[in-house]
Every structure is written in structure tokens, then in C-alpha cells.
Length: 310
Ligand code: SAM
Ligand code: SF4
Image (cartoon, protein in one colour):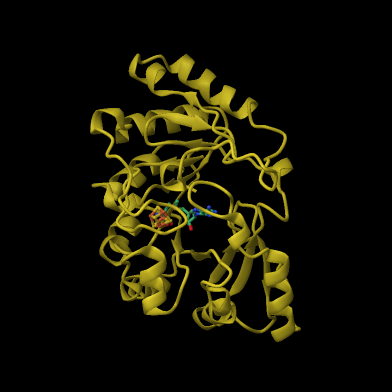
């Protein structure tokens, strides 16, 4: 279960968020940490045992490490990880580790200062790089997520691969999905990315080691550290094995990233009806569609990714 804890963000990535930001939602309409934990408890009782904290930017919500500690103490919750843009990661790294976080994903689309600032509309590359260096020292499982876009950062493909090999970490290329402000045609297909990498590194071979729970497929160069992952939602449709459900900060569960359909869990939660909470989680799982419709002319999800959590 991916849990978005806020729609707010300290960056404005062009494919994710409008320049002016999104409307501020009153705190009373946002799930409290205690409510999120109740959902996690009920989810665990149904067999959901891995949780990813996301946003917006999760580290801009006060007490994010406390939430991780609270979920970690739910009996049966096996894994709690976080996805962050890394701007505040160095500041919170020790707290996150003390809270028991099991892994950190950092989103990073450029290794060049000006370009990073341009893509994120103001982000500080150094803050992310310092965070990554600190995280590498701790040996916490760390993954970098990168969206390659034509004419924007596709020329950094090899730099990102070298980055993975040098730091000994996983860099994953994520295909751009037609959600929110993103133009999927501006993204690169992972088939093409793989071909280009093979040209430079013919020894790149599938990496059979288990890297995570998700749909990424990994490659590595035997003898070198680090791996390259591919998350190919568009060109490598993995709907048949997708086991994700998404909880928004306003208490809606989304069965699929592609469609706007949601089931409301807030009402049952605030009435204190645990049976209903479990029924609603089950309903969301049962309503997962056979497949997404990315690639067709339809664009049924009207929300931006910052409101969904990726
Ligand atoms: N702020 C955090 C971050 O950037 O990691 C968490 C939320 S962000 C919405 C989660 C992930 O969604 C990021 O890695 C981002 O690059 C990705 N993302 C946003 N829009 C996307 C799109 N249209 N297609 C694919 N990934 C997208
Ligand atoms: Fe913020 Fe993450 Fe969206 Fe960038 S991708 S605007 S960091 S939520």
C-alpha cells in the first residue's frame, strides 16, 4: 500500500505539479497519523504488509519519522519505506533510520545543477547529492528514481548509469505515465534506454538478485557494483502482477494509478467502524482493473501525480 501523507511539496517538478502549487487542503480533511495507523492495522489483518510513504513530499509533513515508527510497530507490518525528493533527507536521515525505515527511494532527474533547478523549478541539487552520500554511508537500502525525458535529460542516461556503478546503488528508469501534467510522448521508452545502455556496456546482463517488491526489472555489469532498474509501466505493461493500492492523504483508496476511481475510507474510519474499514480495503483490491489504458487516447485520471503519490 502506497500512502500519501500530504499533497504539499517543496519542489514543483514540471511533469508533476503546477508552478503555483496545489490548493491547500485543510488539516481536518487530511488523515491523521493515528488514522493512517488504523488503516495499516486493518490492512495487515487482510494480508497487506508492505507500506510506502509518499506525497507530495512526505518529509515536509511534520513528524513523518514518527509515522514510520508507528507503522513499524503494527504487528505484521513487515516493511515501511519512503519515497522522497531528497531535499530534506539529510536533515531527517538519522530520525528515519532510528524509526526503522526499511528503504529509501530518492527521485532525481538530473545530475547537472542548472538542469535540476529547471526540472524541479528551484530544487538544490547539492542537497540531494549530500543526502545520497550520507544515506550510502549508512547502508540503508537506497534506490534512485529517474524519469528520462526527450530533449530534457535523455543525454544523462550514461551519467546516471555511471552514478549507479560508482556509488554501488540502484538507479531505476521510470517510464513517464500520462498522468497529471506529464506528456508520456516526451518520455523515453525503457526498451530504447536498454538498447542504448547495451551499446555502451555490452556486458550488461539481467540481475536476478531480489531488489525490492515492485515491478522493476534489473540489469548489472558483472564485477561492478550497483544495478540499473527499469520500471516500464507503458511499454512493459505489468498490470497482471500489480499488487498496489494507493491511499491518498484525504482518505481515498485508488485501485489503479491510471483511472480516477476511488473508494472513500475516511467516513468509515471516523465513525470508528473497523469492519467497514476492512470491507473498503477489500473492495479497493477487488476493483483493481484488468489493465491500465495508458497508450490509448483516454486520460481518465484528472488529478496530478503530486495528489496521488506516484
Ligand atoms: N516527492 C516525492 C518524490 O519526488 O519522490 C514523492 C512523490 S512523487 C509524486 C513520487 C514519484 O512519482 C517520483 O519519483 C516522481 O518522479 C514520479 N512521477 C511523478 N509524475 C510521474 C509521471 N507522470 N510518470 C511517472 N512517474 C511520475
Ligand atoms: Fe514534488 Fe515529488 Fe512531484 Fe517533484 S515529483 S513535484 S518532488 S511530489
